[in-house]
Length: 162
Image 1 (tube, helix red, strand yellow):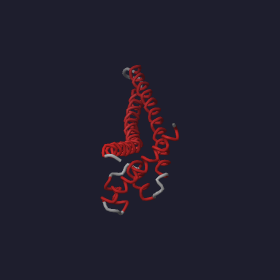
Image 2 (image 1 turned 90 degrees about the vertical axis):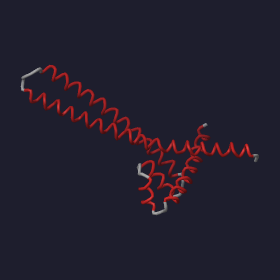
Image 3 (image 1 turned 135 degrees about the horizontal axis):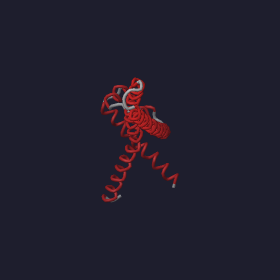
Image 4 (image 1 turned 90 degrees about the horizontal axis):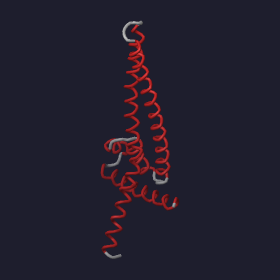
């Protein structure tokens, strides 16, 4: 192989690893999105409850139409947000399932555990290292090896789907 070909091959490998990490991070970021949506839903639920309490305590006094309209708007927002949260949860479940299927194809329990803890369980690196009982350097070597395997699995699946 000529030096130019070696450089091209190295760049292709680097891109494959980067794409594999990006693919794995999908579940990580979707999980963050679901958590954020759930927190927003909790805020809306509190507002709905506050509107309901205000409406019930109104006792016929004040502007009941405006209070009713506000309550209806809050309820509508809550229902819409609740539907979005359910869709995001479904997407997260599908991504987790798909990701676990690929991770299982690594066929090395140590590598699988490191990747699952990092990307699916969203553990910080320090926690992944502590759980593994390996040194930091060794965990990163295992992680890099796992990323190589995920890249190869994804490439193989891509070729199969073409």
